[in-house]
Length: 396
Ligand SMILES: *[C@@H]1O[C@H](CO)[C@@H](O)[C@H](O)[C@H]1NC(C)=O
Ligand SMILES: *[C@@H]1O[C@H](CO)[C@@H](O)[C@H](O)[C@H]1NC(C)=O
Image 1 (cartoon, rainbow, N blue to C red):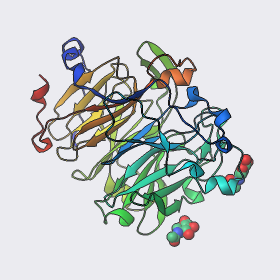
Image 2: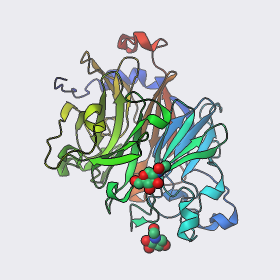
Image 3: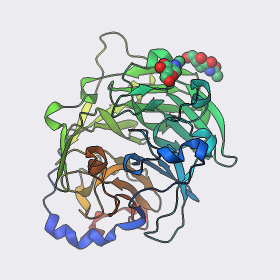
């Protein structure tokens, strides 16, 4: 792949025309819960309860809420898919409250049987949800490892776990934060034969799990580390610093490539899935990595249109949603909206458009968030009705 530069987005005035194209699926000032008393109703801290991940099924929206600080009642919740636009449905713990005892002083065995702290989840082609549990409590403040990280695969028909994969000790470092995952069903088969690529954001690496052979290894490279000069973010008039490594992931089966980005960088990088899946790299082995492009500012969410291989990303400083096609080098901004777009922690490409999870993370993080404004949104940008003929001219 050639090196491309994704050019600074400068068409902001012009793009204002298109801001209305973003649909508000759901929005909340704070998330509301009714935890039973034994699950810590009294300890619920809505100002610490900020989501980072979203996955969409035909009937439900799955939302991940990591335990970044104390007071998160449930780390994985659902809301129904077809609620009135802009409504604020009450999230329901997934699969039920019994999985969400972390943080209320249960013994480790009881806690680890459930879900501790989930940043993101992914659907496979067998109708199952792969839940990546980082196992951490209070990861922003005192960083407690409550349980070892694990993948829990839920059958969405029964809402029961079908498979639990404990990640082996040698794949985990003391500071490991597994915050994102991709399921690659294109190499040696789908579902239980898939490869899972996980982002270790704080001990920067990609952790690869071969679900067929039950083997796990790490692939680390300096491009997965935060760049100190890009560790400060400007979002909607607010500034915050968080030196996070590799976290945004998007996979192209057609190109056999994984795109990734640390939070603290202006680059998007690529690694071939052949490199990732061939087994643990040898000592001192050179890992082939390429720079896919340079963005106008940092961002977290990445998604890829599986039909056209168009990559979507969200430059934070511009509060924009941008697209770039590595095959054609086409690039453009699809939406600019400082009202609706804040910190877009996840993008999901689906046949009905691009789903965006956006929060005032900057305010949750800096403890300046208030209950009297909208802080959390699920957005959708309808794309061209026929994705196979995706033609960006439609936004002009
Ligand atoms: C069990 O939990 C305690 C804190 O509650 C922690 O210090 C300890 O490391 C945990 N043990 C395991 C095996 O995870
Ligand atoms: C997978 O491998 C781990 C060790 O890495 C082992 O503890 C576990 O029992 C294995 N699981 C299965 C289903 O074989």
